[in-house]
Image (cartoon, rainbow, N blue to C red):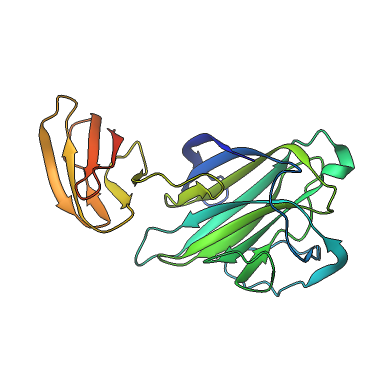
Length: 246
Protein backbone atom coordinates (compact mmCIF):
# COMPACT_ATOMS: atom_id res chain seq x y z
CA UNK A 1 0.00 0.00 0.00
CA UNK A 2 1.39 3.43 -0.90
CA UNK A 3 2.56 5.46 2.09
CA UNK A 4 2.71 9.18 2.76
CA UNK A 5 5.38 10.97 4.80
CA UNK A 6 3.45 12.64 7.60
CA UNK A 7 6.16 14.71 9.20
CA UNK A 8 9.87 15.45 9.26
CA UNK A 9 11.17 17.43 12.20
CA UNK A 10 13.31 17.69 15.29
CA UNK A 11 12.18 16.07 18.52
CA UNK A 12 13.92 16.59 21.87
CA UNK A 13 14.69 13.37 23.70
CA UNK A 14 14.03 13.78 27.42
CA UNK A 15 16.16 10.75 28.20
CA UNK A 16 19.33 11.70 26.35
CA UNK A 17 18.99 15.45 26.00
CA UNK A 18 19.93 15.11 22.32
CA UNK A 19 17.96 16.36 19.35
CA UNK A 20 16.30 13.57 17.39
CA UNK A 21 15.48 13.83 13.69
CA UNK A 22 12.15 12.09 13.19
CA UNK A 23 10.34 10.74 10.12
CA UNK A 24 6.72 9.59 10.50
CA UNK A 25 4.82 7.58 7.90
CA UNK A 26 1.19 6.50 7.68
CA UNK A 27 0.52 3.26 5.83
CA UNK A 28 -1.82 0.30 5.56
CA UNK A 29 -1.53 -3.45 5.04
CA UNK A 30 -4.03 -4.70 2.49
CA UNK A 31 -4.81 -7.93 0.67
CA UNK A 32 -3.06 -6.56 -2.43
CA UNK A 33 0.31 -6.09 -0.70
CA UNK A 34 3.09 -8.65 -1.36
CA UNK A 35 3.34 -11.70 0.90
CA UNK A 36 6.18 -13.47 2.69
CA UNK A 37 6.77 -16.76 0.90
CA UNK A 38 7.33 -18.95 3.94
CA UNK A 39 6.41 -18.73 7.62
CA UNK A 40 6.64 -15.40 9.45
CA UNK A 41 9.08 -14.54 12.25
CA UNK A 42 8.35 -15.89 15.71
CA UNK A 43 7.40 -13.19 18.25
CA UNK A 44 9.71 -14.06 21.15
CA UNK A 45 8.74 -11.19 23.47
CA UNK A 46 12.17 -9.52 23.31
CA UNK A 47 12.32 -6.08 21.74
CA UNK A 48 15.65 -5.17 20.13
CA UNK A 49 17.78 -2.38 21.62
CA UNK A 50 20.69 -0.39 20.22
CA UNK A 51 24.19 -1.71 20.85
CA UNK A 52 23.19 -5.39 21.00
CA UNK A 53 22.74 -8.09 18.40
CA UNK A 54 19.43 -9.88 18.80
CA UNK A 55 19.45 -13.63 18.15
CA UNK A 56 17.37 -14.72 15.18
CA UNK A 57 14.05 -15.93 16.71
CA UNK A 58 13.17 -18.46 14.02
CA UNK A 59 9.79 -18.74 12.36
CA UNK A 60 6.34 -19.83 13.50
CA UNK A 61 4.97 -23.02 11.95
CA UNK A 62 1.92 -22.77 9.70
CA UNK A 63 2.08 -18.98 9.40
CA UNK A 64 2.93 -18.51 5.73
CA UNK A 65 1.52 -15.83 3.47
CA UNK A 66 1.48 -12.70 5.66
CA UNK A 67 1.38 -9.36 3.87
CA UNK A 68 4.19 -6.83 4.29
CA UNK A 69 5.47 -3.33 3.45
CA UNK A 70 9.12 -2.22 3.45
CA UNK A 71 11.03 0.97 4.20
CA UNK A 72 14.72 1.65 3.53
CA UNK A 73 17.02 3.51 5.96
CA UNK A 74 20.46 4.85 5.05
CA UNK A 75 23.06 6.32 7.39
CA UNK A 76 24.78 9.07 5.35
CA UNK A 77 27.73 9.38 7.75
CA UNK A 78 31.04 7.85 6.67
CA UNK A 79 32.39 7.69 10.23
CA UNK A 80 29.61 7.59 12.83
CA UNK A 81 27.09 4.90 13.78
CA UNK A 82 23.61 5.99 14.85
CA UNK A 83 20.98 4.53 17.16
CA UNK A 84 17.66 4.51 15.30
CA UNK A 85 14.47 4.16 17.32
CA UNK A 86 11.66 2.54 15.32
CA UNK A 87 8.14 2.96 16.69
CA UNK A 88 5.10 1.16 15.29
CA UNK A 89 1.66 2.57 16.14
CA UNK A 90 -1.41 0.39 15.41
CA UNK A 91 -4.39 2.30 14.02
CA UNK A 92 -6.07 -0.81 12.63
CA UNK A 93 -9.86 -0.88 12.58
CA UNK A 94 -9.78 -4.68 12.33
CA UNK A 95 -9.14 -5.24 16.05
CA UNK A 96 -7.23 -8.42 16.92
CA UNK A 97 -7.22 -9.45 13.24
CA UNK A 98 -5.10 -6.39 12.57
CA UNK A 99 -2.08 -7.27 14.69
CA UNK A 100 1.10 -6.08 12.98
CA UNK A 101 4.81 -6.57 13.53
CA UNK A 102 8.12 -4.92 12.56
CA UNK A 103 11.54 -6.40 11.81
CA UNK A 104 14.84 -5.10 10.40
CA UNK A 105 17.25 -6.49 7.80
CA UNK A 106 20.67 -5.37 6.61
CA UNK A 107 21.09 -4.37 2.95
CA UNK A 108 18.07 -6.28 1.55
CA UNK A 109 14.99 -8.28 2.57
CA UNK A 110 14.58 -11.84 1.26
CA UNK A 111 10.92 -12.77 1.63
CA UNK A 112 11.75 -16.43 0.94
CA UNK A 113 14.34 -16.73 3.75
CA UNK A 114 13.85 -14.51 6.80
CA UNK A 115 17.19 -15.56 8.31
CA UNK A 116 19.07 -13.90 5.45
CA UNK A 117 20.42 -10.48 6.50
CA UNK A 118 18.35 -10.56 9.73
CA UNK A 119 19.25 -7.77 12.19
CA UNK A 120 16.45 -7.36 14.75
CA UNK A 121 12.72 -7.23 15.45
CA UNK A 122 10.16 -5.86 17.88
CA UNK A 123 9.56 -9.15 19.67
CA UNK A 124 5.82 -8.48 19.97
CA UNK A 125 2.92 -6.76 18.24
CA UNK A 126 1.69 -3.36 19.45
CA UNK A 127 -1.95 -3.59 20.50
CA UNK A 128 -3.55 -0.53 22.10
CA UNK A 129 -0.39 1.61 22.22
CA UNK A 130 2.83 2.15 20.22
CA UNK A 131 5.77 -0.24 20.55
CA UNK A 132 9.41 0.68 19.92
CA UNK A 133 12.71 -1.03 19.24
CA UNK A 134 16.26 0.23 18.73
CA UNK A 135 18.80 -0.71 16.09
CA UNK A 136 22.33 0.56 15.51
CA UNK A 137 22.98 1.58 11.92
CA UNK A 138 26.65 1.64 10.93
CA UNK A 139 28.26 4.31 8.71
CA UNK A 140 26.88 4.09 5.15
CA UNK A 141 24.81 1.05 6.11
CA UNK A 142 21.44 0.39 4.48
CA UNK A 143 18.68 -1.21 6.57
CA UNK A 144 15.27 -2.46 5.49
CA UNK A 145 12.37 -2.14 7.95
CA UNK A 146 9.58 -4.65 7.30
CA UNK A 147 6.05 -4.03 8.60
CA UNK A 148 4.02 -7.23 8.33
CA UNK A 149 0.86 -8.95 9.48
CA UNK A 150 0.83 -12.00 11.75
CA UNK A 151 -1.54 -14.27 9.80
CA UNK A 152 -2.34 -14.63 6.11
CA UNK A 153 -5.70 -13.00 6.79
CA UNK A 154 -4.26 -10.06 8.75
CA UNK A 155 -4.83 -6.61 7.29
CA UNK A 156 -4.49 -3.20 8.91
CA UNK A 157 -6.49 -0.20 7.75
CA UNK A 158 -3.86 2.22 9.06
CA UNK A 159 -0.60 2.23 11.00
CA UNK A 160 2.04 4.79 11.88
CA UNK A 161 5.78 4.16 11.58
CA UNK A 162 8.16 6.65 13.20
CA UNK A 163 11.93 6.47 12.75
CA UNK A 164 14.06 8.72 14.98
CA UNK A 165 17.84 9.13 15.18
CA UNK A 166 20.38 11.75 16.29
CA UNK A 167 21.34 12.27 12.62
CA UNK A 168 19.22 12.76 9.51
CA UNK A 169 18.82 9.27 8.04
CA UNK A 170 17.76 8.75 4.47
CA UNK A 171 14.30 7.14 4.79
CA UNK A 172 12.25 5.87 1.85
CA UNK A 173 9.14 3.80 1.32
CA UNK A 174 10.49 0.98 -0.84
CA UNK A 175 7.11 0.43 -2.47
CA UNK A 176 7.32 3.86 -4.09
CA UNK A 177 9.68 4.41 -7.02
CA UNK A 178 12.77 6.29 -5.93
CA UNK A 179 13.04 9.85 -7.24
CA UNK A 180 15.86 10.55 -9.70
CA UNK A 181 17.53 12.96 -7.27
CA UNK A 182 17.29 12.98 -3.48
CA UNK A 183 18.65 15.76 -1.25
CA UNK A 184 18.36 15.55 2.54
CA UNK A 185 17.82 16.90 5.14
CA UNK A 186 15.53 19.34 3.39
CA UNK A 187 15.09 22.05 4.70
CA UNK A 188 18.83 22.20 5.48
CA UNK A 189 21.02 24.35 7.73
CA UNK A 190 24.51 23.12 6.79
CA UNK A 191 25.46 19.81 5.14
CA UNK A 192 23.17 18.58 2.36
CA UNK A 193 23.45 14.87 1.46
CA UNK A 194 22.79 13.76 -2.11
CA UNK A 195 21.74 10.55 -3.84
CA UNK A 196 21.50 10.20 -7.63
CA UNK A 197 21.35 7.23 -10.05
CA UNK A 198 25.02 7.72 -10.93
CA UNK A 199 27.97 9.88 -9.83
CA UNK A 200 28.36 13.31 -11.34
CA UNK A 201 28.42 17.03 -10.78
CA UNK A 202 25.72 19.33 -9.42
CA UNK A 203 24.65 22.92 -9.98
CA UNK A 204 22.71 24.92 -7.41
CA UNK A 205 20.56 27.74 -8.77
CA UNK A 206 18.93 30.67 -7.00
CA UNK A 207 15.20 31.36 -7.27
CA UNK A 208 16.01 33.76 -10.13
CA UNK A 209 17.99 31.14 -12.09
CA UNK A 210 21.50 32.35 -11.27
CA UNK A 211 24.25 29.78 -10.65
CA UNK A 212 25.06 29.84 -6.92
CA UNK A 213 27.36 26.84 -6.51
CA UNK A 214 28.81 23.98 -8.61
CA UNK A 215 30.26 20.88 -7.00
CA UNK A 216 30.54 17.09 -7.08
CA UNK A 217 30.39 14.35 -4.46
CA UNK A 218 27.76 12.93 -2.11
CA UNK A 219 27.45 15.96 0.17
CA UNK A 220 27.95 19.72 0.21
CA UNK A 221 27.99 22.41 2.89
CA UNK A 222 25.47 25.22 2.38
CA UNK A 223 26.27 26.97 5.66
CA UNK A 224 27.32 30.24 4.02
CA UNK A 225 24.23 30.60 1.82
CA UNK A 226 21.39 32.97 2.59
CA UNK A 227 18.12 31.39 3.65
CA UNK A 228 15.64 30.81 0.86
CA UNK A 229 14.54 28.45 -1.91
CA UNK A 230 17.06 27.03 -4.40
CA UNK A 231 16.95 24.55 -7.28
CA UNK A 232 19.54 21.75 -7.36
CA UNK A 233 20.31 19.99 -10.66
CA UNK A 234 22.27 16.79 -11.30
CA UNK A 235 24.21 17.83 -14.40
CA UNK A 236 24.54 14.37 -15.98
CA UNK A 237 20.87 13.34 -15.78
CA UNK A 238 19.30 16.84 -15.59
CA UNK A 239 17.21 15.61 -12.64
CA UNK A 240 16.34 18.49 -10.32
CA UNK A 241 14.86 19.05 -6.88
CA UNK A 242 13.96 22.05 -4.75
CA UNK A 243 16.16 22.79 -1.71
CA UNK A 244 15.11 25.03 1.17
CA UNK A 245 18.01 26.67 3.05
CA UNK A 246 17.23 27.72 6.62
